[in-house]
Length: 100
Image (cartoon, rainbow, N blue to C red; front, side, top):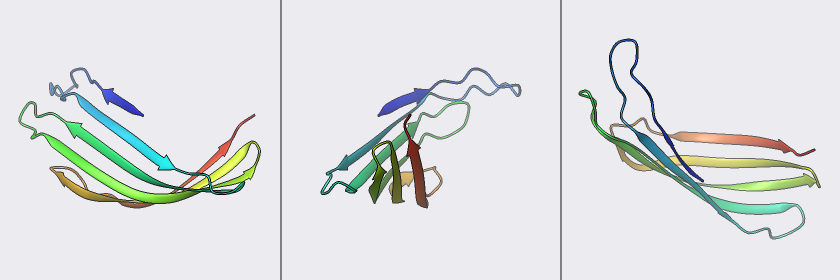
């Protein structure tokens, strides 16, 4: 997926720059219950009002466990590969999905 964030002027008068991102997951379901994947994420924010431009490129791997027809659990590790003026990512993520 991809997207952007546009923010209006803040109370203190700062106008943040446009921020955009993309999140990509590439996986292959190897059995009824197991789907390993890799993830690539990128975020960029332009420079504005004295704030420098910032960007980050994160990569990770994970697995989706398809527990029932309408439920799944995704486990993923992600870390920052490169970036500038941006916080580092080193995270383990869990996502539970229930579809009704």
